[in-house]
Image 1 (cartoon, protein in one colour):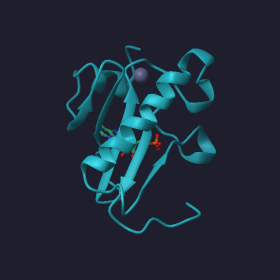
Image 2 (cartoon, helix red, strand yellow):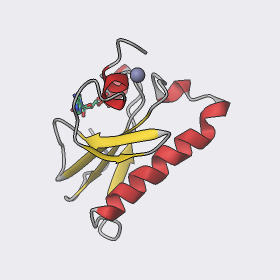
Image 3 (cartoon, protein in one colour):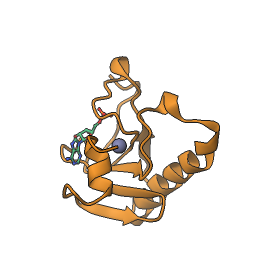
Length: 114
Ligand code: AMP
Ligand code: ZN
């Protein structure tokens, strides 16, 4: 999608600190980290929000989760713990409408989230 910030990051038209890339997705450091590790995992395919995940995207959605987990493990947070979360629409505070999984780690994460 031409006017999408995260499509532009995936296409390398806007810089980001990319920590993982494969044929399906890109993971990069969040510009405004909320924890010592705060990575976003996005599909290269534009999907606007979690509620728009279709049947054909099931494998892709699982892949994003697996990549988030492996990025956390590569930073040494597999044992201590991490959180993967996706915000969908206004009440969850979604501001970028290209689906992304936040991967947060490196501090005690409060629950329930605000
Ligand atoms: P959300 O509220 O779930 O839509 O989260 C959007 C996230 O994107 C926020 O955590 C922002 O800090 C992050 N973000 C926005 N612009 C950029 C950017 N150019 N590079 C990296 N992260 C970004
Ligand atoms: Zn997009």
